[in-house]
Image (cartoon, rainbow, N blue to C red; front, side):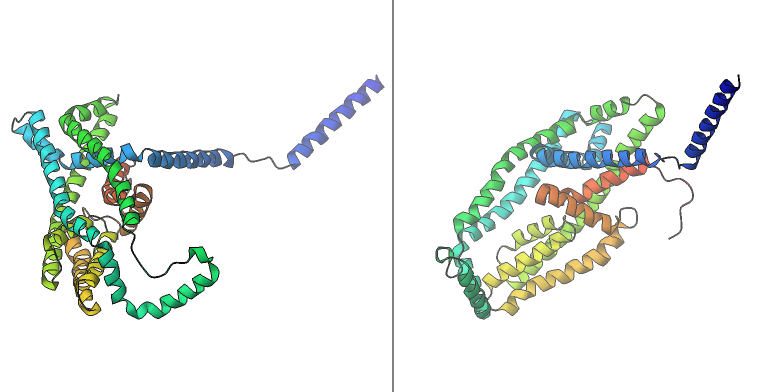
Length: 371
């Protein structure tokens, strides 16, 4: 009996010691692992999503362009429906209007572009003569290159290989033909089935709140895109007139083409005006006899676009349509990196779409802080 009691007491004491040891050992906190796994899953999804956008660019890019233009033309479709115009007639008229505008712009820019491509060797020699004061630094660099590179890799003089210039252009133009077909096809069917598409998206949600939110997102998205792009189009039209006047005043060839180019490039925030100034300087160097004369056009355009970007546009657009400059810049960098020059044109519209969607999906709650 005593032996059994002693064994029982020993087991009890061992159990107490084990419990005390477990209590003294800090429990392993697994609270951070769910958060870490969620962050990892979101990161993997983001990487895969960006890769999918890049791989599907030949299709997604023209379709996205078509949707943006379709949303911008949405109010016109609504007005036509109120007036009793058949949807197919509205779609055909708006579609033909877009075709006329696009190919009108191409026709205005094609002739000067082909003329400059044909003069490429002459332009290269002219630029070389203008920058003769750089001969000594270039010669020093050439000497260093000659000392590093083998004999068969040396080159003399500065020239322009017309084949190496045209080949990348053809590489861009050839896929653009197929993408143009996708763009115009998607735009036509979007305009034709706009009402049905809206109805299908709204009907997809079961509850009343979800349907109302979807309808508000589409209406706000359409209104914001239309307002922004309409105001920007008018402003860019004035910028195009200014670019045409500057080109005419300084004596550059084809002033109308310069106006069209300024109008188009100004749809790209920040970078568009810079590209225009560089092109003005490059053509001025070829056209005018002195560097001072060549600088007049870019400086005048820089002064006008600075006033337009800092004073005219903000005062016209107001707070309702003003986007945060940092988000505009980051959107411009991301979409240009992902989809190239076409992505630069879509950066601001896609930012507007994202902003509107986030504002409705995650509405602000509580008091708005001042400032």
